[in-house]
Length: 81
Image (cartoon, rainbow, N blue to C red):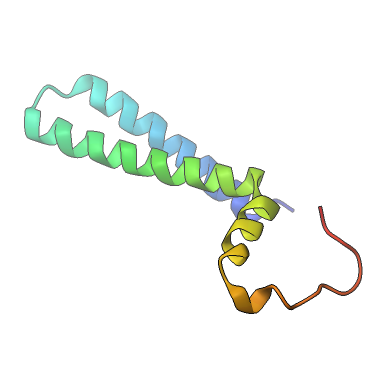
């Protein structure tokens, strides 16, 4: 069974493709500017999501390194890499 994450990737890619096509066809300044911002927003969210897929442990290590209360907690069991 396909995960919801895969569906969200497909929807995001389809939305970016549709926005790119519409942007190429529109000549109106205000509408084009609004669609450009929407395109960049969707692209930004997808890139941020992609980075969180690539760097989950590094990202968590960075976040928790700034919180002193987490330094004294030692993980039990297997070390995840």
